[in-house]
Length: 411
Image (cartoon, rainbow, N blue to C red; front, side, top):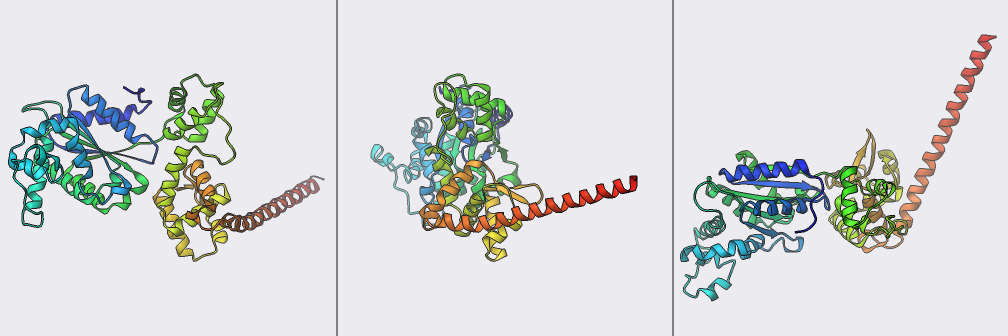
């Protein structure tokens, strides 16, 4: 077993409660939602290990951005797992022949299996759904009360339509079935998959889905994870800096803690440097932005701090409607967040660093892009600076005049 999970007491208790409800009968889906690197998969895997220790059969299937159109990919992974694969021989030959659509190796092992008809024929898609449901549910415990089958579906935001439609069928196929499906979902990408939205809405109406938002670690949990990742004690100042730099994102905590030198002090990288792992995660998020949103992200990265809308609008100089649409996209994908009533800033400093570093890359345009944005924002920020100075001088003059008036009145 790997290192113990740090924190997450409330989330673990909730998941274990859902496991017990599923064990009493009633299939359900638990969705762990949060930003990339926040620890969703780690939390789900912790539940699977906990459930397996209590007799549950478990299996894991993952979705990949590059394989979004590959039908039933996570279901195939479940069926090829040791747990579910061991139960397949108990399935009647008629249904096993349909499962062979996803597992063609079954036809080699069992040449006697009937060949299924093409899916274009009426009723064949429903028959496939039923065969897959029987294959999966056959791995659950025997009759009567018992631990539920627990399946992990990682990265739901990239799940293919066929799997999502079948998952809805599975969760309705056998109401007394003891089944818990745990899915992980990147909040910033949940709107990119309409079939997923349809599934969650339908299960929500049926009371078969529970969504848990996974947030950042607090200071104490960050310190515990940093010590675990570094494999040695870290001094309080280092731990405080780590929490400030990472804002409790576990991926960032682990990467920075592992970069600490043997004395426990995080290595001082060049300004704006980000570890390759963190760089890849954040760059993938930025790459999914539309070109106008990516351009605005680059501009805001150049400003370098929280900024009012008026400053951004002056620096951007494009149509206001396009700017508002880009800001809405950045907020929806949790790249930017509101700071007070009228200001905006990046959701995390690491997002800003990667966005700024990318201004010279192909995704953001030609190398001169960074200089172009710097000239725009420099002009706007100098103007804002001069205005603040003028306002301060005016207020100082007003205060001096008031003081003189008071002194004159006193005389």
